[in-house]
Image (tube, rainbow, N blue to C red; front, side, top):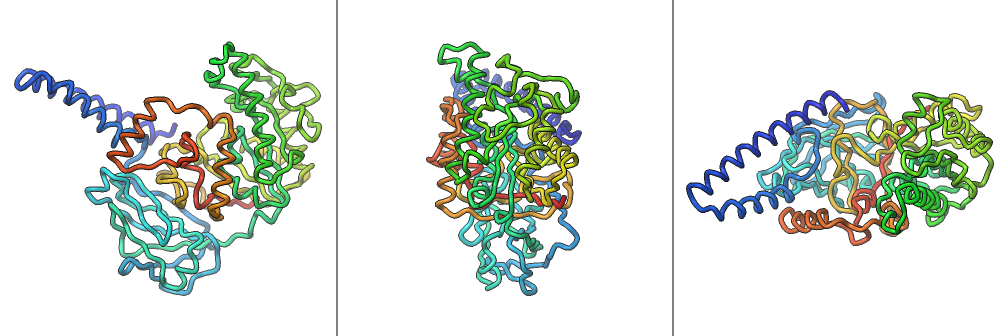
Length: 464
């Protein structure tokens, strides 16, 4: 956890304690001086208000500016927002990924309802109380922008009269040989279903079984170890068969069978074997029998970092990808995701085959567990970047409505996204729907059905 996040967390906890103390004292005073029955009523109302407006986890201030740098050669121009229309100051540079840097300021209503910007036929939402520099994704709206007909209107927020348009040009990476690295089953679908379903030559490599937190399966009468083992087998199966829904045959999918949340420990002690924390298993071969090829770790089945690197090196040399799709090590904080990209880059350094491009994704965030904010089907604005990131260019391909539906159905097949919605979350959603105007998709109850099924996918591009 960064020092900035630690400071904000301490301040948040301090302010929460002070508020609770003041609130309790106020309740006692009300109960003593006015009516005692007002106390439980006010407690219920306070809890409802918390669930409606204060339950989001933001480890930054809505007034913080997002910090993005792009490569020096990136085309840019100042644009105006005049009468609700985006006006270019010069002809639009060639490029398929367009990002509008703009100052946004919430209205008073935008502290209670999610502020959003309507950009043409798209809608991109931001934090309540937003007041600072944000980055809208205009990819796919080049024609309207060039013709001077792209509308931009803030709802519960106002935008500055001028902004900066960044235009980034990339090849269509789906036409190259692509390898998707998934730390767990479902990561490939969440980040890149739209991309890999368009690829003629793609391989998908899943590093772990994803067997932990298997309480749902203990309801079948299994103990913790057996439940974790079953979950690992099911998710391993998901990683091999669900890509077929996107047109990827089984012989292009590989499950390595390492264990969830053990990758960082493996990296720290490369020759030490780290078995599962919950299933009591320590042989990765238990879920490899459907793999299309024999790999180095099949010799002894040991879950070591050295075996992982040997497996990845062998896969690079076998599939010979030009493009690697992997988690962003600065944006995505999940420890397995960070270690997956570390392992991949180490394997590239060992391999005789050298890919040319890294496409990085973020399925989790340090600072905001609602990003991408807003409803399913909308565009993906750039995520919070309160601390500066490396100056990478972006690639944001569009997903048609049929592809978005196929992506949602792929997620619906994932065992880890099928769990029943707990009553507390269901009640919170009812409250937020009624008081804060939020909506969730009908395709699935898990939050990833809202966050991942979007008009865009978003990748950070780095040349290797």
